[in-house]
Length: 340
Image (tube, rainbow, N blue to C red):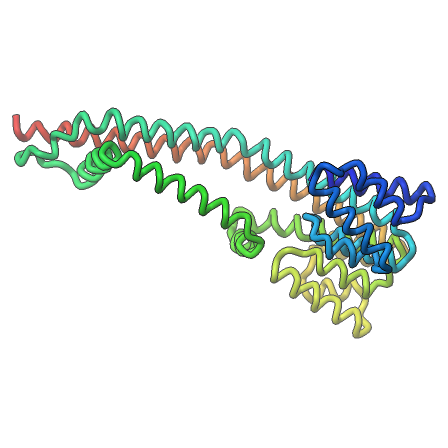
């Protein structure tokens, strides 16, 4: 993704310098000849030479670009502002990359806690629990059900280490394959959008993406209805797409954008005021951009709040897991008091 971002920035710079599009793509492709990106850019160059438009050539190349990049490129070609559109796409990609990087860094500590907890649990199961497994063979010991389960699980792990390792590896590989599927990621996004903890964060993310796209398109003098259609395509959630389509239909029917947003509860009162002021003053692109910035800031704050809660919750879960195992072992040991 870093190479893609750099190549888009380079292409915008070359176009601003007056270099023809096909020549600019060819020059950039030479810098990536030994990488897959170079082959894809060469395919784009060949398509351009054959008379195919840049937006279509870029889509046919199947580069791992966000959907909004294709929308901006298409709008840039239609308005003759391709360089500006590419630069806007690069800014948005850079913001998304920074957001992912910050989220990944913030999740590192909770993931390390989970990993450490799993390792500690396996150590206890494999090396500690089996030492007390002989209690299971004592018919006079009144062992609680949870203690019996923990002791039996420890014995099973010791006797089936290879099988347990294979099962764990299979689960990890299957999870990675699922996450790599766009359909599964879309399902996860939809599922997260209805959870109380993440619903508000997803709302801010979707509105920031929609507003940023609409602002950029309007600033490039794309007609409002067309800009709304492109902005709808940038949304990830099915419900948000449906609401945006209804909003676009109302605007097409003659309603103002602010009135349509109010009918479909698209934004809150602050957002409505920004859009209404922008429509009345002729500065809709600027006010929608402010709306996007506001929701982007709110999304970052919501994510930080979630991560602040995630760390103690992770510690609590790991502590409960390890503590539960040790308590189960102690209950098994104390059950021998009936024998004594």
